[in-house]
Length: 77
Image (spheres, rainbow, N blue to C red):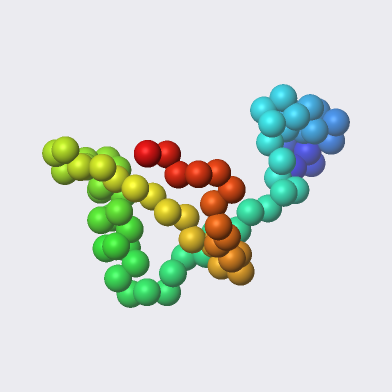
């Protein structure tokens, strides 16, 4: 990057550090091959942007290769 923009490597490092950027830490995002993915995505995002009146919207993040375990804290009532 430094070479492309014509500044030193240390300048790039300083800018990244100042803005808390860590381009060496890559996180992946896999897009579904479901042909209805875009339609389903619009439905879900639509719930957040314009929820039905008096609705409660819950979100659950599913991670593969991770086993759900019992609660570590009692559920609030």
